[in-house]
Image 1 (cartoon, rainbow, N blue to C red):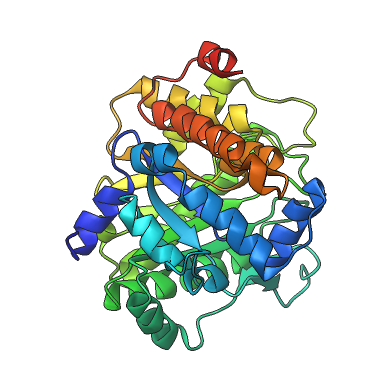
Image 2: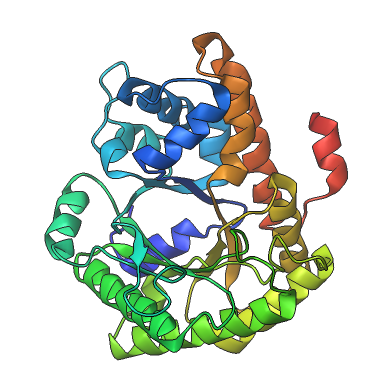
Length: 345
């Protein structure tokens, strides 16, 4: 594997493949494990991730890269093989989540708005992660739509932090995934698709201005944005076709063609919604960048349920993971059809 940022970024958005977000924090994975009634121990977390990374069909054919959490990048499989090596053997690129989480943004909107922390000491952490095998990193910023929100203060603070993070990554020869997420779920999610478009466009413009000021090389990064979609609590939900069209319209208005690829987050969408929207966008064609997926829950939910924490269910869980990975791989080519879901059921 070449070490050029541009080549790594291109490999991350290779046609027919996407990124597995397996970077749930210990707290987040507890919620996932609670849903299947298993204890949140280091061993269970390791066993679960190992099960995914040993899913040969899914990993070799549909997963280009895997985002890891700090604990996971240091873990070894049951037989002593580092998990990073399992990922590399499958032909995928290991990466790492480096932000320290979204914290309340000081000021009058502190109960609603957040800013992502983790820049202090990041240069040194990136150097260590590079030695541990990471060739890309991820930093997530969250933007909440509510009455009077987002504020310019919140958009600007998060865009600036994303750019500083991205510049530090490239200095360390690590590809940054730049993730500004306009939330579609949560208590304030009553906005319609027009409001989501407006805020997403604003956010992306601010992010690319900051990236330019920080002299981040666009050819050596991947963007991980939300889709343009109505909030979960909005009574008027847009059709899948409208979500696809408005998202592409927004991206064409804001994302330079020099960016190799855009790997969407699934947000609060169902598994099939996230797949369908991606496929419709790719079917539109005439796009200056590759559009693919960087899904966490939307890739893993079926596998997690099938696994249930039991070793005898590993094969069934791997089949469920491979199916979702294949469906999203097809979506990244604009070739997904609802009938393909039923065929596997």
